[in-house]
Length: 90
Image (tube, rainbow, N blue to C red):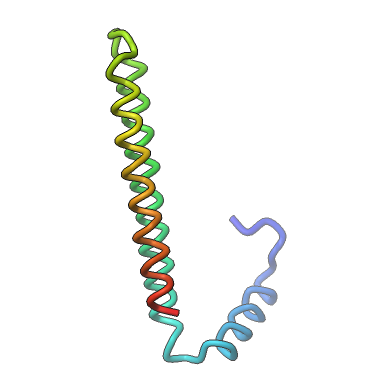
């Protein structure tokens, strides 16, 4: 998926990260990043399913706005949790 990054450049970036953070911090940083990516992915999937449900239903748009607002609130909470966990780790 890396279009313009070669193997040597990835190794160099990893070496710089190792120098900056140290070997003991790298697993916790990777864990935090993986958790964040999973939260964003699940939030995106939830939004997609809700949009698909609203498109598939033939009901007037009265309840769709309320459901969409609830999903947006969920996403905001997920991002707040993500930023809080990143701030705690750093």
